[in-house]
Image (cartoon, rainbow, N blue to C red; front, side, top):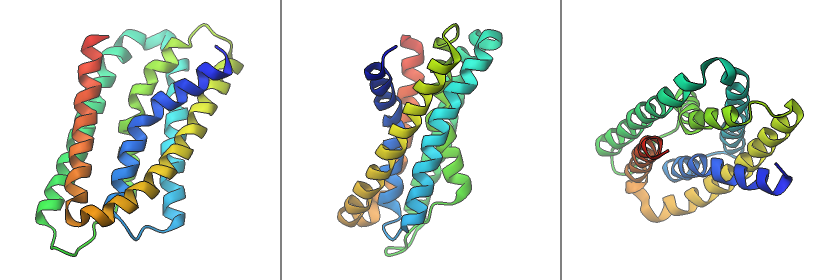
Length: 185
């Protein structure tokens, strides 16, 4: 796989993380730069780590991983999206919802768990090629997630009280997309 293909792989795998990052920015318009970098780092780290995990586990558990990964991602995203929708309905008009470490951690896992299967696809390739590809994925995800948070913060001003509701709907939509794609593959 050449560098251009690795970049396109990174762009493709980063889209779920970008959507969730944008919704985080919409929810928390006063987010600090430090937290923005942390969120982008977390999404980038897991988008690079999960395929590596899949690469090493692929020769032992590939059929089980292919079956269970979409279901795990689906339920995590439905849970997180439902929680966000509930919070949006229950919050007071001007109250801003802050993202917690535990919710960010679950978001990062849920949006990158399907990347495990990408690692399985690399089984049989040289380790240096897999590490390079997954590092590129991590870097691209970091950059795109950071920019998505900035965009989300701008849209959060426009949507005001509906940002958390919109973010929850995005998470549920991503969960459904992952599950449907697993049936079509």
